[in-house]
Image (tube, rainbow over all chains, first blue to last red; front, side, top):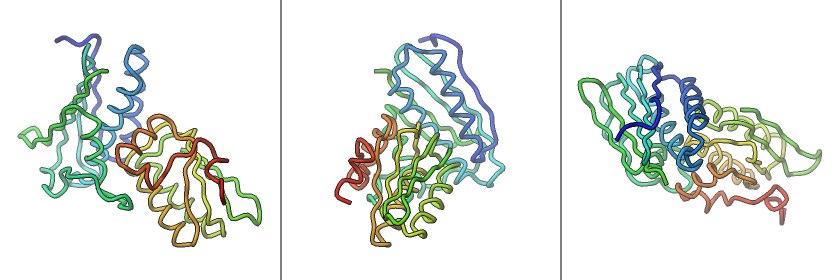
Length: 137
Length: 112
């Protein structure tokens, strides 16, 4: 299926400030696609911010990881692919189950997963590839 | 993000307003702001979220940290007026059980 309109791309250094660039990009998507449900867009935004936040926090070497993010708007779904240059993700950091209520960490990737219909992480020659899909309601 | 505080002198209740995105960039400031508020003797805190357009797991962690600190001081932390995104994130993380979303500040302070 072809995208209904142009794709979006962003390349940035994985530091906390990059999150605002992603928020701005999602805001632009919402402006360009007023037909997109606000819940679909905000849940997708949450997933992207959690994944990028994870790269910022845990990417190695710290402060030197670069990522490329592409977003595609299709008639039936939103697809995001983030590729970062960091070392392979520590297996203990991969999403498990939601931590207990008073925990102050460990929710990010679990939250991203529940916001998405498809979530895939793999380490390839290109780097860490995070694929996120949300079906439009 | 912009943080504001309304706290009548001599009252234990303080209302903290968060305007903007409560993400990894903003969460440390909210943590410090809550600590300061508790340090000044306002151990009952309402975080008013009507102006918070977005929250992520870092923002949630700052609220949970604030809740724990408030309880250790013999008080509590409650939240009021969350937007749809904040409400969804609270529900999906099961945190709406410990951070029950109140419709408005006056509902949150009910019983204090």
